[in-house]
Length: 178
Image (cartoon, rainbow, N blue to C red; front, side, top):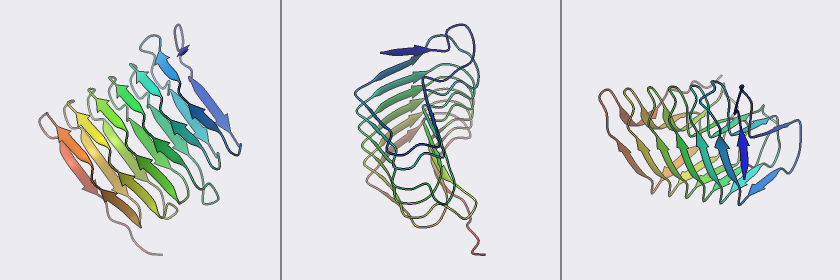
């Protein structure tokens, strides 16, 4: 069990400029509602995996999994996780990296204002992402179940429920070819 962000902002797990990072069978809990305290943060990590883990964040802008990268960051797998966020602007999974990503069979609940269960977006980088068999529930005002802002993303067999005013199940944002 990893408990983080008890008295100040911080991260449960952070990896920067690494390869083959695997987080498996972990309980990662934010200790108090500190803002900008992601449970898992990958910054330019290639071949990252988060598997069969329980993740809970309570602070504003505190994501369950926050994946930042560039066009060379590839092959991420996020599967069989239970993710709960309760702070405003606290997304369940946010992926901003290269291609060949799989987000599969996760249970995600967000309850804060303007949250997104699964967010996949980049500036003309992310390709070939699969978002499949996830269960996403959002209940905060202006929340979104799944938002896709990238090309070649396959969204299939997900169960998405939004339960608040101004909420959306799926948003597919425009993508302009260069």
